Amino acid sequence: MAVKKFWTIDHACGHTVEADLSDRPADRRAGYARWLAGRDCADCWRTSRPEDPEATAEWLAKQRVTEQAEAEAWSEQYRMPPLDGTDRAVAWATRCRHQLVSAAYTALVVEGTTSETEWEAIEDAVRLLTRAGWWLDQRDADPADLPELLDAASTSDRPTENPHY
Image (cartoon, rainbow, N blue to C red):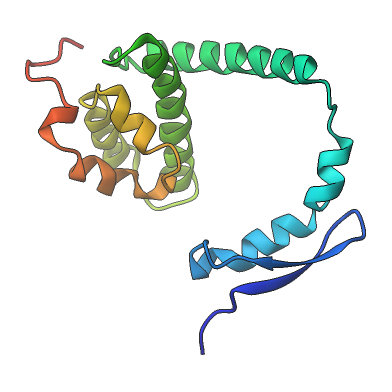
């Protein structure tokens, strides 16, 4: 029997929606449906948001500054090398790298079975990937897949010289 693709979601706002979850892996549909049930439906969410585009843009700019500062502090703390690419891509990829690696640590070490020693090897492999585009391409990846993604990275994603860390 196949895992269902269409779920009836009773949202927190009281509305009921038939949601197509076929774009999610089968083993994640039930959890996502449960998460959706704890939130307002899309229509109620949209009406609760401020419609002032300037306020939204201002909030988003502040959020990006905060995220960028956190990502840069994390990069320094864990001796992550600077990324290669355009200024805009590097800034975004720095945030993506921080989010993915932090989430992978939680998934693999805190909640999983990866030892700290095994994690150090993963972290060392992370340091070798300096192409901003690679991190941008992985921004939606499942954090638990990080070791496999690191193994699959090509030589063009890594610097050609020995790193100096």
